[in-house]
Amino acid sequence: MPDLLNRLQALADRYRIDRELRRGGMATVFLAQDLKHDRPVALKVLHRNLAQVLGRHRRSHRAGAA
Image 1 (tube, one colour):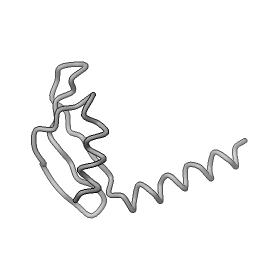
Image 2 (tube, one colour; image 1 turned 180 degrees about the vertical axis):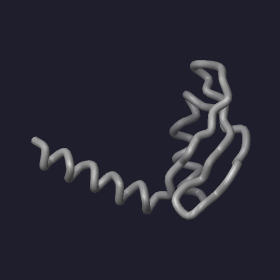
Image 3 (cartoon, helix red, strand yellow; image 1 turned 90 degrees about the horizontal axis):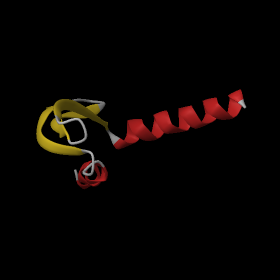
Image 4 (cartoon, one colour; image 1 turned 45 degrees about the horizontal axis):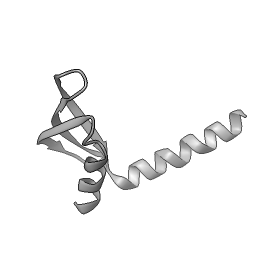
């Protein structure tokens, strides 16, 4: 949970987190307020292990395209 709180803090300049909506196997979804556009949004934050796997996949895909 501390890792999730750290990642949410990184979004604090753009979104105000109101509450957690759902937590699943891949991500947690929050109801938030988009501060730039003044509208409610659903914010999906991937669990750390999935985000790392997807990050590695994207980096290797970009390297192959270059």
